[in-house]
Structure formats: structure tokens, C-alpha cells
Amino acid sequence: MNIAIDAGNSRIKWGVHDGNRWLDSGVLATADVAWLSEAADEWPAAARVAICNVAGREVAASIADLLARRHAQVSFLHASAEACGIRNAYERPWQLGADRWAALIGARALLGSTCLVVCAGTATTIDRLDASGLFRGGLILPGYDLMRAALASNTAQLPFAEGVFRSEPRNTMDAIVSGCLQAQLGAVERMFAAIATEPGACCLLTGGGAAPLAAHLRIPFQLTDNLILSGLVRYAESL
View 1: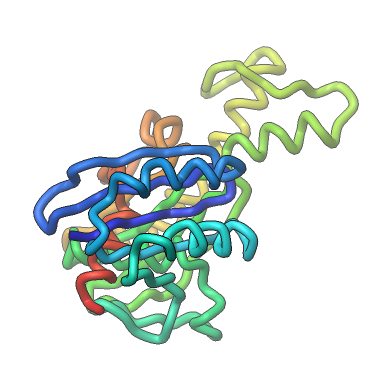
View 2 (view 1 turned 180 degrees about the horizontal axis):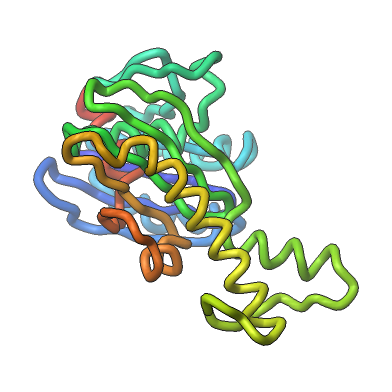
């Protein structure tokens, strides 16, 4: 039995996996990390726990403390030069975000072909994984909501927009929404162009901000709900 915990900047996602399927899962705001103890009380004590955390040391310490009372097998995933069939071409492999590393491990478990791994959350990350299992590098940009928030916070006359996506926007709300989405889509599609001719090339799209991108992407993609958690399960099984 494995428990996977993905502590992100905005949300903490968790899931209980029996080796074949997800038995239970949940999500809470990262600010409410203490409430994770209520879910943890229901988890099998003998289960292995694998965690990736990009929310800072205080959140990591809180999770470790609340799990220490019940679980003996707790591991935090950190990027390395190699793990679970993935090789890391980052200049300093340990500086790669644990969430990106987990997503790459999850992607490799799903596909044996070249792929683009896109995690859309507070930030959007776009990572290239080749058919041999080599992570070749990737992009980090502000997420769709963060882009809209930045315009609202740093300009005098632009609101936090709730418009709709249009190819030729004719009002400010639609112009902001369409501009922020086009920036996200353009980054993904430009990265995909470099692998588009490779056999079986695909984009794996995950994260809380994935849905707006999925509605407008013009490349082959799969929407994958638990990619990071799946990567954590595979990591736990490798220990």
C-alpha cells in the first residue's frame, strides 16, 4: 500500500494506492496543512508514504511531524541524476523541482515515447522527456491565473478578468483572458513543435489549471489527473 502526497504552492493533493488502483484521494489548501492529519488518521499505518513538496520548509516540517506519529516509512522525493528509469540532464539535477521530477516519473510509467509533460498550476511547467527516458529540459512560466492576477495587481486600470477566450477579442475582459491563455498555449505548442515528428509524440497535461488549456490546445495531448501522484507511487515502489 502506498500513499502519495503532492504539496504545491496552493493545494495539497493526496491519494491512497493499493498497487493497482486509487482507493481514496483528497485535496486541501496548502495553508490548511494541519487538516491533513484528519485524512492521515484513516490511512493504513504500514503503508509507504512518498511526498513531493514545493511549498517550503515549514510545510514539509508540518507534514513530517503529523505523519511521524503513525507512519514509519516516509520519504520525501528530491530530484536526482537518475531515478525510476529517468535520467536528468539539468545542469544541477538536484535543483529541479520535486513536483516536476515526480511528473516525469509518472509520465515514463504511462508512455515509452517522446512526450511533453505540462503541469498547469500556480506556475506552468513544460518539460521534455525523450523516448530513452532522458529529461532534456523545460520551461517555467507564470500560470494562467497568476498572469491574470499580475495584471490586476500591477496596472492601474486592468481588472482580474473573467472574460472568455476569443481569437479576436473586442473587450478588455476577453482581451486579458485570451492573451493569458494564448501565452500558455503558445509556450506549450512551441515546445511541442520540436518533438512533433517523433513517433508517438504526445503532450501529457495535468494540474489544477489544465482545463482551460485543454479546451484550446492544437496538439495531441492526454489530460491526466494524477500524474504527480502516480509518479510518487512509482517512486515509493522503487524504494
